[in-house]
Length: 481
Image 1 (tube, rainbow, N blue to C red):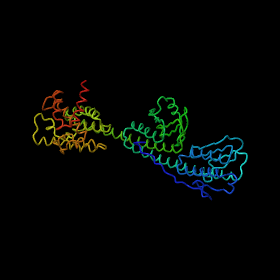
Image 2: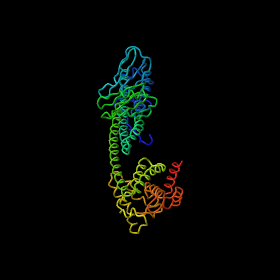
Image 3: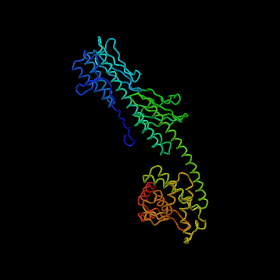
Image 4: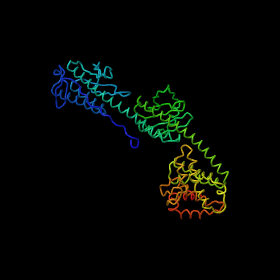
């Protein structure tokens, strides 16, 4: 499962039957008192092999079914039985069985015990069994019990590890997702792989559906909407020949379902899916809280932008234009959704520090004095200080502070160069310059689009990041088409 971690196999060490024994062909075999009456040297060799098979299963429980089948076939031949069968419960919803020969008549049963609990039986079909044969079959039932114990222990360990893996991977993945709509596909991709499902669906209480592997199965999705959960317990069932497992998301918020065509789901897998559902609930709560904070922050930003616009119409319109361009250029540059978000907010707020500049400087039609330039050059730091008070805007703060830095390191306030300048600030620097050049300012008339682009290309690699220039050019070219 590349990319999602792996389930570690826990090896269960071999256990040996503590019985009087002798050695035949390097296999240790119990010697019951009356075995001589039913076993020739050849038969003893088979019994030695069977004991070896028992130990093989203890060491490698995944070989359980094949080893039990060999044991049953070998015993039937060695004891000259008409038929011999074995059936037993390995664990939750898993059975093991093997049969050799044609069963007929009433069998003699030899219980397979796990502790004091009967989990299955070895059934011998013969006209009669002497005590030697019975003793061998009782020993075989004990070997089968050891094999079942080992397989059950391995299965339980694997299920526990799988549960921990599901929870850990889901927690790590969901912990970094902020948009509620992104939660559900991520959950399904991880859970389908970790719990060996062929399909999955999250049905939300508001009617929304996110599904994978259910293409062409709308009828099954509709049937799943009718499933009712009794308390917090997982639901298991079959629809259209598929095995299904479902867990409610709580508070009538919906449910998550998994499906596969073979093998019923186990209680342990139900526990794992229940843990995933809890992670979904927590992640969804975080995303909704984040969305609420985002709305509050946006309202605060809008209020700040409105305050600035009330003092300077030019700056207010400039903010609106650069925000739209910035989002498109960020996508063109290949930034992820969070990066695009930072660029758009930084574009909206990059000049907010001008709110601290006197009107006499901000709206001056002539050239600025050195003192006035010093005051104007303080606006990135003033803006960063203001934006820094908004929770969750740390990356935006960096972009606001650095939007007048240059690619060659000759900008302000810190003299950053190249990739030291945050990518959002590099984009805003280019977009800010283009918008300023192509719109009237109190001190000059607008340049044409072509002249503005020529200026950007002239400054590419010195004042501007070349990649940011190319991204803006691509956006503007699409717009002009």
